Amino acid sequence: MRAPFCIRDIVAAPGEKTRGWLTIGETPGGPIQVPLVLINGRADGPVICFTAGVHATEYAPIDAVMRLLQAIQPDALRGVVIGVPVCNMRMFEHRAGFVSPLDGLNLNKVAPGRRDGSISEILADVLLREVIGAAQYHIDFHAGDLGEMLFPFAGYALTGKRALDAEGEALARAFTPRLISLSTDGSTIPPFPGSLNHSASRNGVVSILAECGGNGTLDEADVRTHMEGAYNVLRHLGMLDGGAPTNGPRIAARDRVVVRASRSGLLRLGVRIGDEIAAGQEVAEICNVFGEVVERVRAPGAGLAGLVWAHKMVNTGDPVIRYWITEPA
Ligand SMILES: [Zn+2]
Image 1: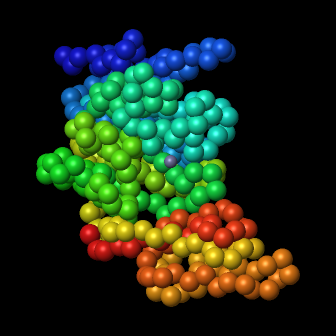
Image 2 (image 1 turned 30 degrees about the vertical axis):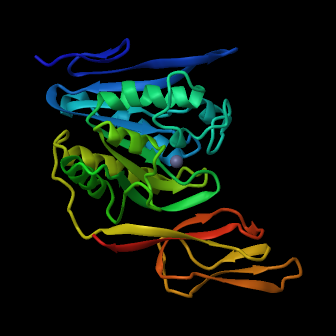
């Protein structure tokens, strides 16, 4: 007989799906809580944790985790799924991008957090010790934040531990059909130190970053990309029936470059995410308020268009496009 699985007072017996709230602090209006779902499969298997809403205006990943937690049934599951559909409820209810409205901190920059810190640091600490730390595998679901739209990818922060890193890369490859980002400390590609992924993998959890969607949108195609990635990982780990995903060719990130505006004015972008950019290619033009083109923005090198911003007016130094420099993987 398999054992019950619990986090604090939330308990799922074998074959059971349950849910509750983790209290991490309070405001004058009441407790600050994190929603948690536990799905304890009828059969033995690994423990995986899904988190979304670290940035709580990233709606496609939030919806994907909500739907995964509804869809996955204990009878069909080997092992345990721990799910947090919205890590940062105060951001969610305020529709706040990037940082917590309570302390102005970015939850994905303060990991591993601290028990005696401000509320975002406490949240990072609770998530890493009690939630992600209860699992062997972890997917942190993200998108571009407000004003950002990105090309889908999966990332893993290399630890230097060979067996762990092999599993991390395998999970990233299982999640995404195209682009993987395996970072080392000091590299220009994510996941970065301070993120939940980076801290979790240092704690021995195989933790990947999953990115798709952005700009405050909730598009069905983006939700499906996240869900398919998660199902591929679950099949790869043998937690659900079905074949492992086809391990076709991938590309790996080596570097990424932000192209910025020198001049100011209306931005007419000439490329979209996923476009292959040639060295020296014009990616945008900027015109002044009289309609005269004052700058033709060119990419200094070749790459894959990875992120565009929603802003259509730029000042000197504002980002225009971010592209990946990649290699076959
Ligand atoms: Zn994010």
